[in-house]
Image (cartoon, rainbow, N blue to C red; front, top):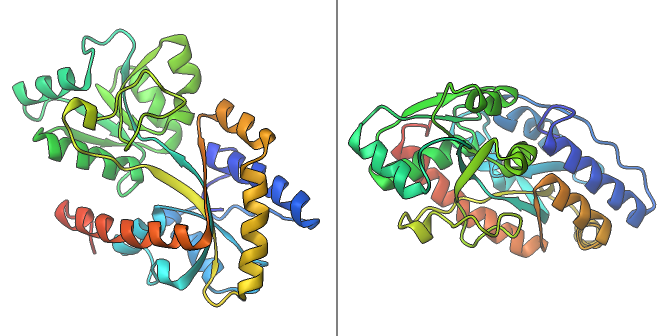
Length: 283
């Protein structure tokens, strides 16, 4: 586990582990090893035997941690097992803010270059890269404001930033109460959990950077081990229990097989390397 205990990512990993344990009739223990943009967890798992006993709850950070220089190995040091879910980076403002669409926010940014403040979850995080991609594509200069994960949402609610790029799970209760308003989803299609929120592309800005999470093993895992874990993950992700929990948490189940997952990671790695190089985050 690449994130601290108690976070949404941790909660989701434990839901997955519980379902996999039932389907495999085995104990699965979640161990949290956060830090360095995920690199600490990746470095630990890649050093283990590829026998299926050490798994990593991986994400887009497999590429960002490598390209930012946090670790010496890239996604090719792991065998993909299955993608589990995707999350939609969203553009969020306070509920009483004057903007009513992403276009309104972009227009404001263009009229006052360098005046808008935009918060995210830290330098090199998926939300940071999504923010840079969005505003660079829109041709808007903003003030980039990184926060620790626990500080991101309070920064907006307290009026310290004009907008956030964040993942929906951290904002579910605030969107329901009207304390915040979602202007756009940075996805290829509308998020089923946010059906009334248009994508950035629908509003004229061609940016889509879904965050995904899945399971991988150290390189060299036996094919039958990968197949058994893949099947256990499929059964878990496609179960009604996981679906209900995902809806409550603001995440979208999105199972992909080992082969499909590997292709997704390889394609995105090229795109993230190019984007990180363009914004000075490539080491």
